[in-house]
Image (cartoon, rainbow, N blue to C red; front, side, top):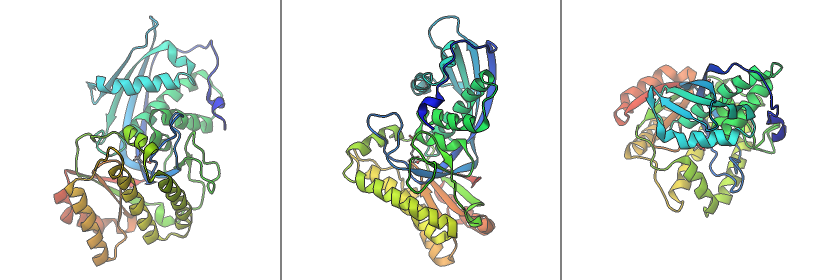
Length: 353
Ligand code: PMV
């Protein structure tokens, strides 16, 4: 599908002058990380990525649209009832980018009310769930204009629009394992929008627990948009992109045969590589906090001792995502509360859905 097919071209249409749309979208955690994007293109990744969408960790967005009386666009944004003017530049840029594909947006003013079930900018991808929820709201407007709009197109274009807000957001449109970025071994994968992972997945990877250890609730000091840019001059960038692509090939066969240890080794390596990239950028940065390291070492020790299938992944921040099979949930969760709780500000019990 070419990006031209996402244009909404009609100049005249009828739609009620005011309306409210509410949508929910989940956060996601990447197993193979997207880190680095093309310099002169908008939100095009330099390697393909794959993520799990996360249950219980989501954004609910209420989009109120009102027909414009004046030419200037007005957008107000509220998070948990509080107006957030600091979010405006990102949202305005998003609307500016997507109004090219959704010309009807130019006729309205908007109030965006959002609510997250988790702290924003803390390394849980709040931009992924919020941008995807907003993209879904916008597609609901488009659906009012195009009666024949098919579900498949609705989701593809929602993913395409979400990507223009935040790269990883395009993966949040679908549940389960989701791929974004062109990869030679994944049919249908492309850089413009995400697709549900199209191949066989062993049952062990279908019901997976994701326990999120919040080590630090404060917003990150370096935003991922800045971090991506640092990859353009990164001395190890080329090797990193090659490695990510090879990891994708490995993961395809791991997901098929159900080798949990191989899976765990791969996702931990990916997580540490992402952090190694930011640590070796110029300027360099460290997302981990002392308690992040305490958790990682405690997990490694526990794994050796107990032989349990518990592995971690990390996002662009200090928090830790623990992944383990549902069959082991009871005993592992008990251990997390007894041995890891001490290092955390909060624990979020999520799952890959
Ligand atoms: O979606 P962005 O532009 O905020 O980038 C997020 C990138 C990572 O979360 C670090 C990795 C990923 O693939 O989700």
